[in-house]
Length: 230
Ligand SMILES: [Ca+2]
Image (tube, rainbow, N blue to C red; front, side, top):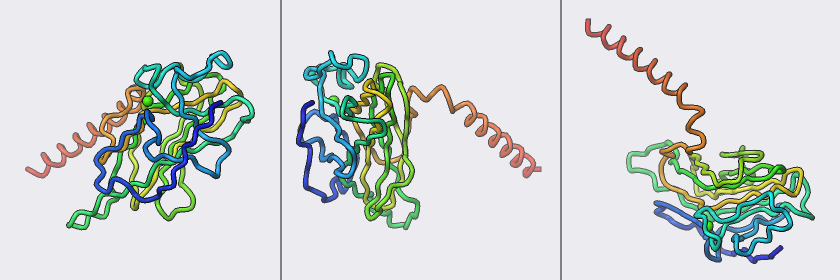
């Protein structure tokens, strides 16, 4: 396996007036992402053109998210000596939260974290995304988490996060029960505001119940208003 030097020393917050952050892993250094030094192994930067598929052909992507053989992505190599439960964490640069409005809004600002994941193989473990706020030694529960084989294609994840101080995003791959468990990520984005569009692959599950609630609320409101006009 190739060993790539991905370490960076800078810890200064970036993008003080963040509008959008986008990392497609095409160039080194990789958008100031760093490898966690307190985990079990590192994420590997790779392209299909440099990928050796004869060892474990039934896992991992055959190209990056754009479909290019030359395009790069990050992935966890789950072959030996990796064992089940081993963790690899990729840490984003620090992001400053947007300055408070002059009206003293107390709600923490919202950001939409997006990324594409490729989780193909019968031994796929877990992919987690955490929000790590400055000054916190531990991260709370994962902001986003998915376990198991999702098929041989790239899918989009989007999750709204609400940091109250400058923060980092941590993407963690956990090795599953075997060697056909390579998990890849590409096109990590961070935008101000709540996530607007749900990921296409989740659109079929939740919305009907929500729409139902909105209609109930609307009906109740209309009844109240009509009642009040009498
Ligand atoms: Ca890419």
